[in-house]
Amino acid sequence: MLNRMKILHRSAALAAALLLPSMSSAGAANSLEKAKESGTVVVGISNEKPYGYVETDGTVTGVIVEVLRAALEPIGIKKIEPNVSEFSALIPGITAHRFDVIGAGMYITPKRCQAISFSIPITRVANVLAAKTGNPNKIHSLEDIAKSNSVKVGTQVGTAQVDDLHRAGIPDDRVVLFNRDTEAIAGLKADRVDAIYYPALEVSDLIKKFGTGDVERVEPYTIAKDDKGNPMLNYQAFGFNKDDADLVTAVNDGIKQLRTSGRLFKILEPYGFTEQDLPDASVTAEQICSGS
Image 1 (cartoon, rainbow, N blue to C red):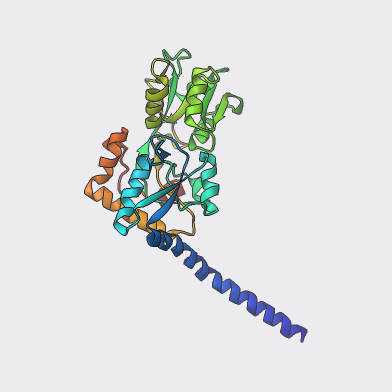
Image 2 (cartoon, rainbow, N blue to C red):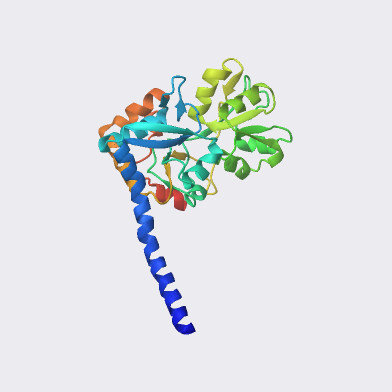
């Protein structure tokens, strides 16, 4: 009798295990199907220009958001509902299904790929430095900061920029982390840091809005290099829960159509992107995730 009970328990466990993949697949289809049925997708953003932010009238916009809007239009998803979080909370949020897509200009990195899925790349960008006007510390690379005994650099918590700073050998006590880019440029102006390190487009936008006359982009600047000695170019993409393979495919199909028609660049250009910022069509998220 006891042996029979064990066999029954094992059979039930096996049956449950066999059901898990199909249940997961059903869950994966639900995010896309629900979005199609409602015509709405919920997007996680960190309310930062120019990527994804909410205007004073409640409209959600930004370059990444507008690419998503255009990519989903062909399948009838025309409304975007924002879910605003700190940047560092976006990956925990997507893994908990608090929203459907991360639309905050997030970089694809091998570390992030362990937690979430990414679309094909939308843009290719480099990170740069900004300093007080006149660049009083004469810094022109991350290596210059690392060699200094006192220069402090600020960037955003939870971003790939933090890894760049550590890779360059800058110690933790000279890296100041901010929750938002606006806080970082305010910290630079208030002398809490001597430089800030952000994507080039973001730096230009910050200076234009908050730093004119006080802050300048560091020129000339040597782009940080990876472990193989290649200039580090970062690829921005949409992030997804790993269960949502169907939604990833739908967004990828939309991005490919935008590329082919030339509409992708038309969306990017008003935000300051150039044709050089368009990724090669052969570059995939899988390649970047693998570090190849």
